[in-house]
Length: 255
Image (tube, rainbow, N blue to C red):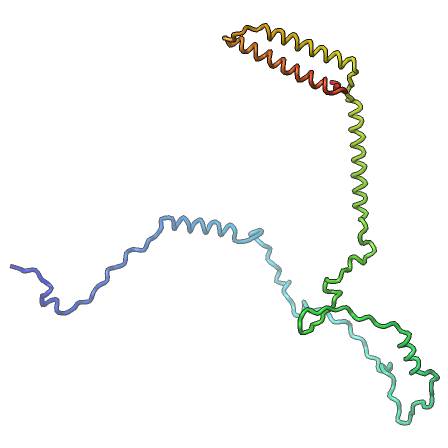
């Protein structure tokens, strides 16, 4: 009878090399081929800018030596006969001595200093405690614009624009006045106003008389509607009578 091998078997005394299991196969997308094809197609389509076929330059138009250097000015022949500087004085030559001027330079300089205008100091500003000085005129702190001749004067284009706006406003006002004259409202005279007022009062009396003739018991919908209509008419007539009685001057717009 064959017994199974346990951990205490003699065959397990010598350790054997552990064999690592093989790695699983690498994942490969099913869209790899399609992506490659799309990449090649679009990349080839945008590979160059401009026409695909370019004219090949001629071999004769190659870059020659010193072709990009600036040409030198033409050479001129040096003339040795014309001296550039005056000749050196000889050893025997002596300067002219004994010439004196009658001008008193000391008194002249003193008079120039006394009568001259004192020089104004250059405006400066100091921005550090160590005493660093800077020019004030170029710093932007000096108000130069207020000293200009045209400072505070309205520019010419703004004056012209204001005149155009004023002219347009005058034309608009004239147009409005003409329209108002065309559509001028008619004023009611005192007699017409009194006649309208009496007519409104007479209408109110008739509506009021009809309202008083209603039955005491309002027990149906038509009666309620009739009563509401008469009340609305009386309210409107009272409003019109009060308006006309309150205002002495009444205008009527022309249709």
